[in-house]
Image (tube, rainbow over all chains, first blue to last red; front, side):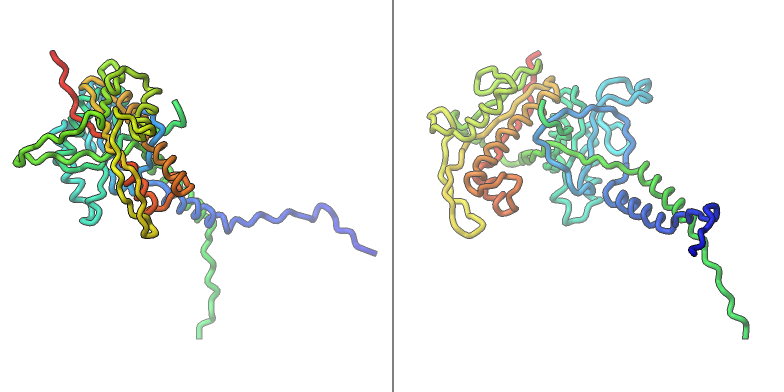
Length: 156
Length: 196
């Protein structure tokens, strides 16, 4: 005759968590590879214009950013609300673009310098006068590949 | 001889916590957004030592797109809406009926990836985009977008008939062929100074 076990003695074995670190590490590596570091603190606020025919900017290390927009809220007391140009971590004027591009170019490998791209992130309410000045300086600095940053929408 | 001791295993249960901490650190300091934008090549700066000769472009080969400060768009001498700009630009690029007032075409031999030649009438047209200093950036980008869309659609049509694929599905060599057949000629002039 079969011996019936008492129900009270049966226990669910604790779930093994030894593979949990491995799972977390996989997620970690995924994030490390697919993201890039936030390298700049924004001093200006902007809302990018919308466009449908946008291209992705690949190779982030070849991209230099120029931000144009209204100073962010905590800076407005000091700098007002007129649109400003931000290069690296401070407000600059169009005259500094030449030095900025030269510096960025120095940071790149010799072989990569030709494919350097400038990404212009400007607020949609900026006047073209500012943008044209930036473009003119970029031409002077011989940084000719320019991307007008805009967010992708499917249609208007 | 000393008795062999059993080395106790290191407790690895906190490894998950460490990994989580590092993971959260990366989540906070990194960004995932991919930058997108309309890519343009700026014309190189003119050499001041070399005297500039004005390049003469025939009137029929030029489509002047002017964006005013109030956001109105003028193309080819007429005020048009943003929606109509793409079709206007497409008509200008393709000139399907060989109109006398639309750009000339020059039959050019384009080398195909397989070595053969492909004679395609390449348009000589140039789109000149002009704006004033107080044009808003948003309208400017919208116009640039419409012009890019016109070129992309024409390229799609041509590559569809030539290779049976869309332009973005082509490989590098085929893409070069189409780019040669439909060059993206948009000239961006310096903005006009408004009369005071």
